[in-house]
Length: 448
Image (cartoon, rainbow, N blue to C red):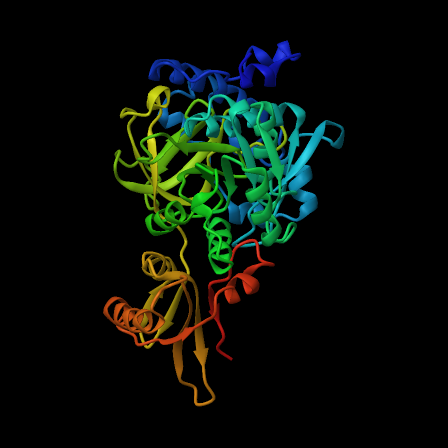
């Protein structure tokens, strides 16, 4: 019995509509979308928030793009404008007796929201998490053991991944982030329990690798051969450093709390294979609201086709700017799905003397340097009102610190036209400083 069949066992009423298998053709996906989008709209009409907004929508014509586009786009700002009471009474569509659990939104750009999930929602949502293993080539969980370093709690990715591993028959260590289990202990568990799969945020994977290096431990010698990352941007430089330090292959995954895990890289790792049988994905021009051609950037707007009983997310603008390309390529059964890449994420930056120092670009420069173990960038303001950049750097063991200082000064000047103050730190200083954070605070504005 497969993992997905195990998931549905004992629930024949749900089994009939559970997307157990990967569709075999675009036509099969289109049929699923046609059937499920009607259900999604019907459920949304139970919501006082959606009911007036869906007046005049012909439910029998939802396959017509013009009719579908009449459904208004839902934004984070609109949800955040509601009080908690209004959100649960007007937007959500169930009472407390049906709720299995609550999922916390990211909350990185505003107040977090807590989305109710029914027992049926969790059953459907689990499909996407189980698929991440298959996308990475893990079909038989009994031959693997997982170390799960994603935060555990009301943000769902950690516990959903852990339960998915159990359904796969995979032993798992529910370690959580360094805030719940110190990173030194996590390294000790990886050494003693010898997991083959590591799962977590890429920034924490780097933190573990940097801590290991500072303690003279080579993580590349561990049995971990596969890494599943999610919940934050994974640049090429981050991926390269992770794979170099861990000696493992990294697969990135994409999801959103409002819906579920929705995409993952396949063997080719040429973009997220986007599961269009679980949700409808539109890539829209931000000015016109019209679909952009394949290969062009636009706003990602998503509609849950399953798992939408508690909170009906129709045409949800998650804030992601992406590029979608048609199905095809060499990712096995997952090749039936289109590929998606992030064209842009909301990125932080420091502005110094008229120059924008993009955080992602600076991070790529630093992690692309093989002699850098870890770093921190601070924008400093002195008593005279002058501002400057201070880069604190931990060299890798055996690196020439003086040569590294000169090289980073030169690269920063060439790339950003700024001369930084480079501070060389002893191994382990930044690892200790970052330990209490879910995501390492590498960019800090210290101006007064």
